Image 1 (cartoon, rainbow, N blue to C red):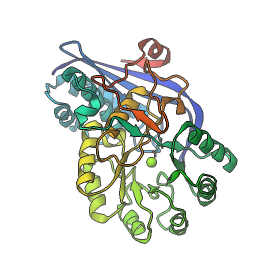
Image 2: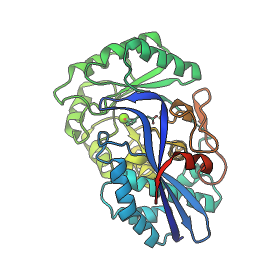
Image 3: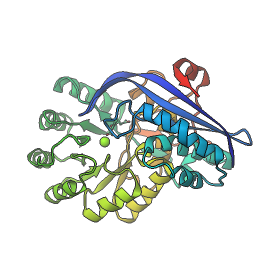
Image 4: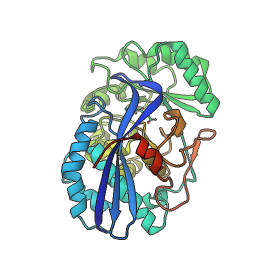
Length: 365
Ligand code: OSB
Ligand code: MG
């Protein structure tokens, strides 16, 4: 396969509900879409779902745009490949910049699976017909507003909620949700907001019956996570810490967590995400697929990835409507009774809505 054309566009969508994490709040998102066209005219779409600012990882929309334009696009235009893993290896010449690389890797898998005539999920090794979805709830202005959000999502059929926590917004809101909704599974995500000396909050959260505690400390703090895991019953789950498979090897060796959140964006694409899945499965670590508020293209990739056998915990693959009044695909991703159906059509399974994309595109190349 030779890619003859690479189109990049920056696309903006408003969020239906403000989302606040320990680091920042957002009301609209700008992601970069990558469309690659091969010699047969087949097109594959990918999404670079980087946040605007460098608060989740070092990347930003601006850095992704520059790296995509100046480094990844030329690499993709120059490469010949038979399988997406070969293209991913070529993209690996660029260090870091996982979000940017992920968009190209995703586009290659979408194109390749369509050309093979198989659904992306099957191409990746997935076998599930539907994947269990959870929702991620941001920090709300009050506990009552948080409880209202949980109630809404439970009424929609979700049975697992993840609550964002931060110093000053942790034990109290988590206990309130736990006691008001005893039947759902709850997990918390600190996005690395706690100082390494903080133990008491986590000892307290350890008594609440949480599914997991996600990324309590800073990304590079593998040793601190291992020390915390030793004193807790609740599994720790790494997110930001694991940017490549070698980080996972480090985490496993140290015992820095018992669950892994795999994100296509954070790992640099579907190719490394599948590798991380395989390694975690061999080591007996349950995994789930994390999200970055993806638009329909990235969301479709998350659904496909979540169909792999090691994804035994609910993933952050909520329906498009959780975030967007209208998604960029002709059909939205739909969650029913807590599950998203895995498409059986060849390729990504969702098509971009080209007319609507024109309306939300703010820049292109
Ligand atoms: O830590 O999982 C995270 C969104 C932005 C940055 C970090 C995270 C998130 C989410 C979104 O929790 C989950 C989703 O896409 O549904
Ligand atoms: Mg997280």
